[in-house]
Image (cartoon, rainbow, N blue to C red):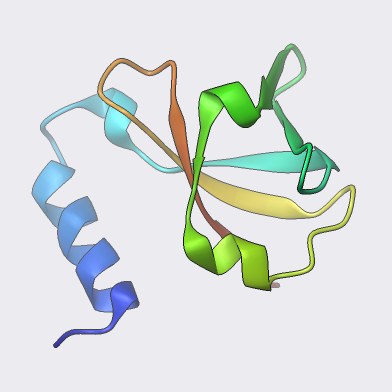
Length: 87
């Protein structure tokens, strides 16, 4: 079985060129779980109603100001919260 990183890269490769809205974006954590809220740019605030959180995120200590990776759904109103950006 392939690792989740390889599976995610495969999904990105399949989606490339299909839908520009399917590109990964980053957001900043305003408040962490359990009542998570994220800032997507200067005007858009996402909360738990707009997010599908990957199980892995529950294992990562998120702090206000951390950057996370989001993948929008086809409609662009719901986002998959995939991982914390490591720098």
